[in-house]
Amino acid sequence: MKILYTAMVIVSLSIMADICPICGLPKDLCVCSEIGKEQQRIRIRLETRKWGKATTIVEGINNKDTDLASLAQKLKNFCACGGTAKNGQILLQGDHREKVRQYLITLGYPEANIELQ
Figure (tube, rainbow, N blue to C red):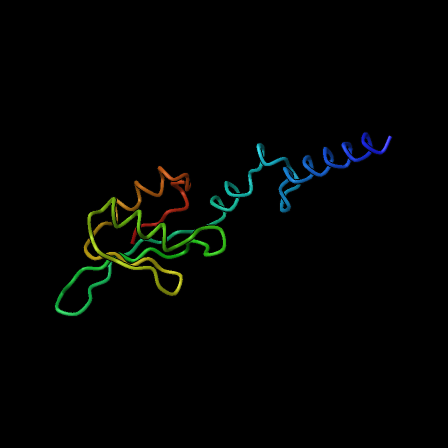
């Protein structure tokens, strides 16, 4: 009987590990990241810096749900430019507003929540 009881505890613990702590759904059906993406208002704007240099600034992406440094690296590779992630913003060298918008849409961010300025 003890072996059966131990097996039941192990089975129940493995089932409990597959449940999302935020929404309570199984990990296979978890929609937390999609809901988080839909609630964000992303602003992509162009700013002129010293000596007339254009800089694309991406604001409004939640730091808790998304790793800004890795997203900035992906955007820099996609746009073939330099940049950084600082203070909750992603800064890219040059005017890449439309490219960034298209890339964020392919990542699953809703088109209606992305504002170009």
